[in-house]
Length: 443
Ligand code: UNU
Ligand code: FES
Ligand code: FE
Image 1 (cartoon, rainbow, N blue to C red):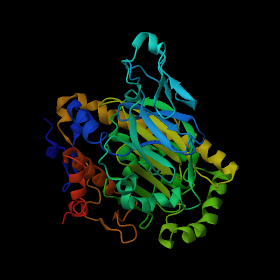
Image 2 (image 1 turned 45 degrees about the vertical axis):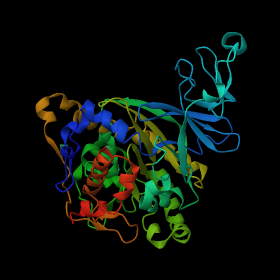
Image 3 (image 1 turned 180 degrees about the horizontal axis):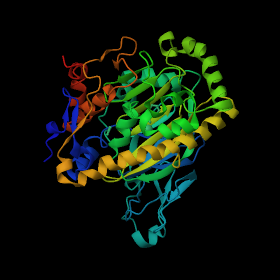
Image 4 (image 1 turned 30 degrees about the vertical axis):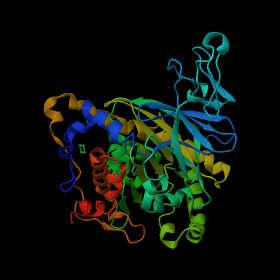
């Protein structure tokens, strides 16, 4: 039995080190977190046409996501109801239906079992075909971003995102919508899934140090941080955490991030021109954040950097391995030339062979694999930076840490992590809605 209370100390801002290694904790995470949270699947722009499909994972379960004939989107577990072989073997494509490679059972786009080779001759009428369709998974979308959930009793995706939508809307909606460029690149890292999630949710601290050489080589607004030569001044940024652990760290006006020269100038011009439109379309308060750099995670395992424009899912593959899916983010109305520049910048920085992606990987792998040693595994992780400095954000309804560098959203992420591991069901989670702020603010 895992003693969940011992894993996170919300008041004190620490977590047990064994959360990065322990197989029993991992099993509990698959049940309590990946079995009940909204998990990113794909974006409308990746499967625009009838029959377009993409294969991904929800936790350890492989799913296929398909554009239906009526324009809706469905997701199915990617196994055959005959003997359990994989039905869709391609990573992505367009199809009129799916035929299992093993014995040739054929399923429609809607998952229904349409035909079975020699059905009459070999089965007679024993086969109840209408009960043998591919197993469907609940899906919902927000601004074209599709998520799946194994729990029929989970709150809606909109409620799950909650007040965090205030920040998502800035880039998902502010200038007329966002798109992902895929299919996603896929790569394996030998680390626990939470090491990159916590890094993206709230780590502006490592940027100048871990990424010193890359920042210096690439330039752009984040280049000034290289080698920790300067601490971002007061007012340079904030950190945000929300009800279900989604968080974002903001570096104001650093939108072009690691784009220098002509590309950087093109990006800066886009952000400057569009800021007034965001004020009109959303609000003045949100427009203040437009053109900033966001480092962020959506609980549990979906991260993005807006500005650096990478969008990722860190799929768990056991307690000490992940499969990373990486897309580029563009705003729909950007000129094609800027979209191309953004995609190139993303590939240079956070693509599979990106400079900053490899900088980070060494840290994440060591944080995970050192825990083989029982003495190291027994310690605690520290996320106390800025403890006690946070307050409620009157604009967005979230909790805000008032500096660029701090660990407010680490604490928010692990508070939610512990709550999901503890809660018996979604009714209990909903009953807790009034408590989370007091827990984090230590009131
Ligand atoms: O990698 C990150 N978490 C990050 C990158 C944070 C801030 C700026 C750039
Ligand atoms: Fe942060 Fe070592 S300085 S992990
Ligand atoms: Fe990093």
